[in-house]
Image 1 (cartoon, rainbow, N blue to C red):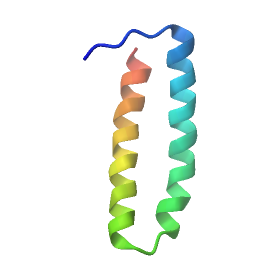
Image 2: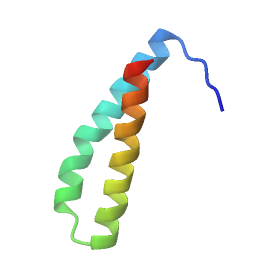
Image 3: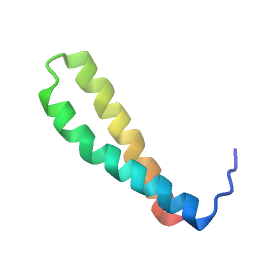
Image 4: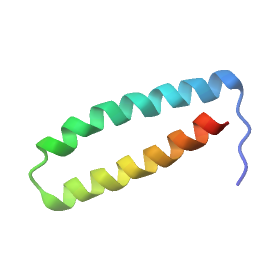
Length: 57
């Protein structure tokens, strides 16, 4: 799949991903359930990969 975005759209997505990553760390630390913590870490990894793609764009 190929997606074309304007520079402004890429910047907006990058800001949203950065904000979510900042908010995710405390949520992971305060989660008591192991399975939920693992799901959050997977989501964090996915966001890290997405952020890398957005930075490269």
